[in-house]
Amino acid sequence: MPTSITDVSVRVFETETRLHVDSDGHAHPGPGRTTTAALLTVRDSDGVEGRCLAAPSFAVERSLVEQHVRPVLLGADPYQRDRLWYELAKRRRGTHGALLDRTLSTVDQALWDLLGRRTGMPVWRLLGGVRDRVPAYGSTMCGDDVPGGLSSPQEYGEFAVQLLDQGYPAIKLHTWMPPVPGAPDVRRDIAACTAVRDAVGPDVSLMLDANHWYSRVEALTLGRAIQELGFAWYEEPMEESSMQSYRWLADQLEIPVVGPETAFGTFHVRAEWAVAGACDILRVGASNGAGIGAAMKAVHVAEAFGMDCEIHGPGSANLALLGAMGNGRWYERGLLHPHLDYDRVPPHLNSIVDPMDADGFVAMPETPGLGDDLDLEHVERHTVATW
Image 1 (cartoon, rainbow, N blue to C red):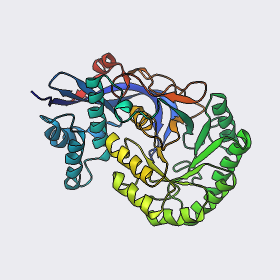
Image 2 (image 1 turned 90 degrees about the vertical axis):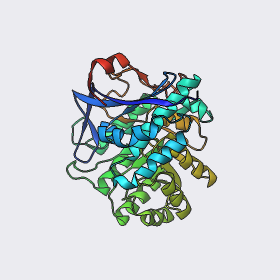
Image 3 (image 1 turned 90 degrees about the horizontal axis):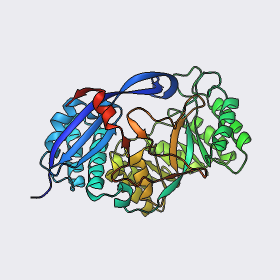
Image 4 (image 1 turned 180 degrees about the vertical axis):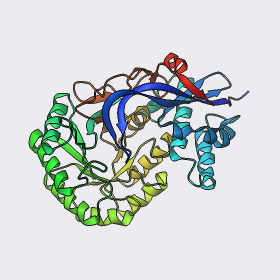
């Protein structure tokens, strides 16, 4: 008999973190605390399981799984990932936004993990296997008001030197954003970018992800400043729902504009941005692009237009994308902060998926599936809810 999906389940479990999220959704370091994460598991009729960590767990909230995910997946052929993705994607309209792109992404990642485990191959090889390692850039957290953190241009410069000493060949800044007092401030952003360039010298690749709500004039002023500083790209300084604002900005700058990151519409909207000339480099990731399969379509759109496509965020699924494409230069390793040890292994993992070597490269995982080294015993012992 052909293989079919026999079970779809979610475990919500306790783990530990030092991340604290502010009212605008930005993470900052703080004291260790207990938090919850979720693990979606898809099992087939041969007993093979595909898994995906879902953090935050609202992406696989009980009603979404019971009303949409299970009805679509149960009894289906797990190899038909695109068909299942489209069935879920078409349900989004009727849910008035309740069925999230992150839900589609979590399901898609679990199905790819299942396929990798069935075949004994890592997902990046199944997707095409273009390369087995990729250079990383150090991606900072947003600015703060914590002394010794990222509270001043001088501290940004000092931290940039630390990142170079750790082996990062490139650095991306996230500057001050609300609710940090005084944010946003174009002049302060320019001062931080200038301090970092002065600290690392002219040859290090630098990027900027600025406040997402600047006006056109503010975005242009900041873009011209970092263009003079020789930055490699400029990311999301304005509301991305206004594609014409980005076309206006890209037309006036020589520095490459990257986008979109958060605009809704998966690969469809990224094709529109490419056609409109609203960006010079496309931007997508497994989570914000509604899954590995959908993100790869955006990668191929960029490739068809002779554009690079930079992958948003760290993690196993984004490593899989980078391992399967040739038109993206960097792996985003972060978010990083002077008061946080990025390489610390959380209790629900046995190891991190993206250790960086002395040359600043991250290797693709060679284990079957996505490569997340889960401590399933910890997950089971600390489970607080299942559905």
